[in-house]
Length: 360
Image (cartoon, rainbow, N blue to C red; front, side, top):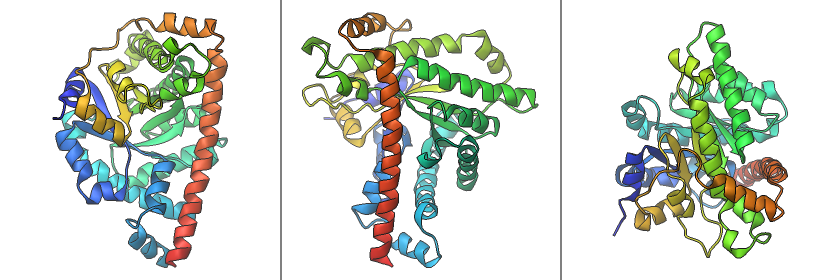
């Protein structure tokens, strides 16, 4: 029997998003079912998800043939396919977007990670994709790396809704939040509305995978949650700051904290570990399909994250005492994540090229 946990999470004030998008999910009506029955109110996507969907099945074949005949190829062809899927998904979430006063009901599309070191090119592509979609509930994903932060600020200034991805620590989250606020402040200075939406995506489970062999057994699978709790406190502090309050008075809305990478990597741990532990109002949890189904089956009705971060500092201090350099590890996780995005992107384009040759 299905659990009421997804609905309880929704009532708590946390948005439950699906970290998946494929054409068969749309064509079979599965996404609509998740919206209707499992309280799903948005979704995220990434190159790996698209690559698997395009390379390993036939759902995209007819459209790829059509686009090849029209002279499209490579990255341009991918963005056509991705925008077709994501605009359909955005339309399924349009009622959620409207009912929540445009706070929820978003879908996300990534810019090319190959542009990571080119601020202007990233901002240009973000605007181009956002304009091409013509949907108010589409986020463009830009990594929150040092090189990505100026592109995030510029994109927000241009009125493009941004999902800041690849954040691993409270410091990285605060840097992304600063870029967001700078973009809004520039809009105010230019006489524009500061109502441009954003989420800041904090990756959780990769922390625990990185240290599992380096800490005592009783400390395993506690680091990611502690980082999430610490970032949540910083998020709440920022929303109460004079800087944000001034912008809010002029019509700005919070850049919501989003918990990402919330599928459990450790087979010996609960498969809904990060969902149960990171429930909090005015936040988002985006989860893989397998985790969503597990949570709908046996998730618990959640309590809320403590406003003050609870035991976060004690758990982080214990890891530091065990020899984990948290700052260095956060930087490594972000750097490795950025490289992984480029690898996934290249695999995706390779997959499209191979499929195109077969279908041509």
